Length: 367
Length: 187
Image (cartoon, rainbow over all chains, first blue to last red; front, side, top):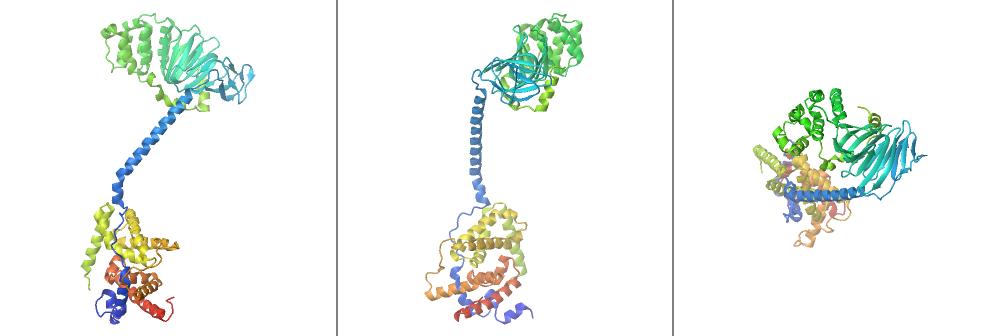
């Protein structure tokens, strides 16, 4: 006999399932306590998965609204930051932010609080580097054995003169705000990062790391895109920009053409060597030559240019009919950022790393 | 009342299907689970807190359970899992000194005589003083009106355990109530 059977024998059937003889005590408790039983009262709407699913669209709207509000606030904040960045009181000195080695301003050794005022001359010694805020629009650094003068500074216009040495600049601002004068020319930022080097004789080079830079020698403007370099001469002559990865034979042929101001036979040896050594990345040089010396289009340069940018329809008839239209079509097909979209170069708003900066300044004059 | 084993199998299958359906957000399945298990949850809560609080907490327990249904590994374990949530909710509520609803006196039946109401409160107090296993099965049997087999189905306990709990709990309750009559206490 197991436990259940023993309980049943003792008359627990009524307690178990209301079968068998009624247990008066159990029945009395049922009657008394029944009033405490669960009653199917009006239920609150259960906040369950299904109600959550119904609430989901509202929640999505709330999230979308919050995201939109955050975006608007960010936009307002960015605009305020941007406006603040461009504002600069006329003549306000540029703060020195870091220095290494012998750095002097107007002949005096600098300290951490030093600043370069208008007409002030910053001079660096051997192995020296100085880093300054370029007003509020960016940053510049001066390499060893350099002489830099702050010519003018105010909102929208900041002008320097690099008399000698090397200068690195990174600017994130509308085109033309920062200009650096070198012997015979002026280098204007078009929203960019660049390295400028000038030797004691006034010859030098410009290498562009991002965006575009314009070189103006009062006779013509030369646009130099990122990844390209251009030679500068003390007499104001500006070379044709070339990709920094161009071969030595290409650079030599280009220098030969530049040396004669483009006055070469369009089918001559210099042009043939240039065309033979050209790669797709050298299209900027070919385009610059065609723009500066249109007669070169009579030779193989024109065909090579059309070959390097096959997506642009090109014919000698179209060239003869409207040369500028053909040049514009080729220019727009080049794989560089648009000058008018300077703000897309936003990484230029970030500071550069010290070690990279020093390496760039040391190599700015090479290549 | 004898139940066939086949009925238990069908019951388990139905429960599993309901839980799975509720997991997918089916409102009808959630409602069916509520209707089936609300008395059991209420009974468990009533073993710890007053009726008004048990009424209120019952809905909280279901909200919690249905929200966390995804955490339940096996649908068949739903009864035990649900009652575990109910016990935790009751213990949390009990830790607060004042009844949640602010109602201190339990007088659910306005038509009962004063003597019956006192007897009912005394009986319920005696049941609440019993060990948990006996307390819950007796509340489900005597208050919620469930039979032993129904208690077994809806708590996940075996019928044998329920029957033993009922038998032993009722024995302790009889002793406690007779002791109350003579001024003694169950503990």
